[in-house]
Length: 143
Image 1 (tube, rainbow, N blue to C red):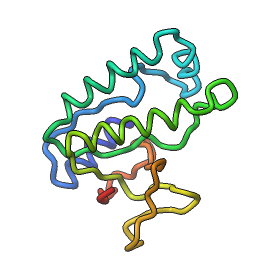
Image 2: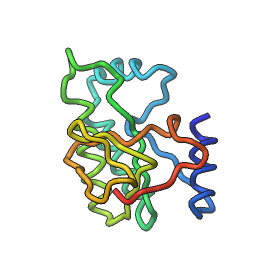
Image 3: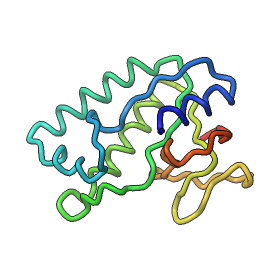
């Protein structure tokens, strides 16, 4: 469902294709499965490799952020891992000078950013809607 929605939204916003990358280099049915990855002794090394690969892949393309809220619930053992991963990917995207977007709305500092608001409240940690939460007619908004 997520990929279908992302493809439809991309097409409806004038794009002819998409490349999907994950914030964490693993696929999990349940977000909480990421906690096992957090416990991997090579977590930092694997994450660095993932970010390096993403930077090479996205250079020259528009990027749509869609990681959603922190539903991983690793806050007790790994309270900063999710936020650190978000900061790292935002910095990586900025390094390769991509134009960034989010779909429909995003939650920042307790506020909702959307196309209905002229001012944006983006802080260093924001939560753009996960692609699964997009509607098929979602609009992309400059981040």
